[in-house]
Image 1 (spheres, one colour):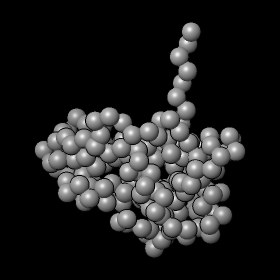
Image 2: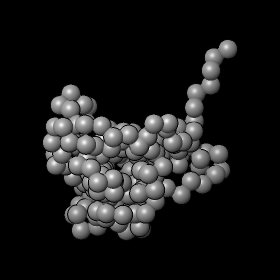
Image 3: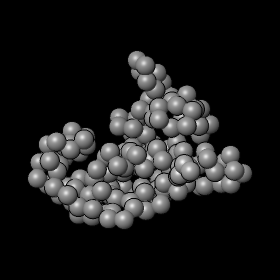
Image 4: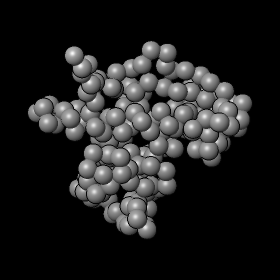
Length: 166
């Protein structure tokens, strides 16, 4: 008998052992991103549960956006550490997006406006359900202007609509 896979909604459940505090090391997959946010090697960083990431996403109001960087900086500030693991945060952002779309297929609603969460520098997330094109459509429904930069999409003037700390 093959074990059943977890649903996206089940994957949003909090994980044992999180939040977890670790010292930033050069070999971490999130090292470069966390370092760009101001953390240095040896600084404490936090890895949080999906519920904290989702809680942040839910607070982004209509007509505004946030970025993974802003979310990580806010989480780090809350825990009084130098950084937040952007890799696990990004995974939980993508998991939330897929959980919302999965719930829609079940005629249920999860109120997580995931499309208001952008990647660094205002770029759209091609790992969201339907890829960057679907992300673009959801943002344009809220009145955002999305422009193509090379092969990627970006919200024009995203900084003027950005929520930094929730």
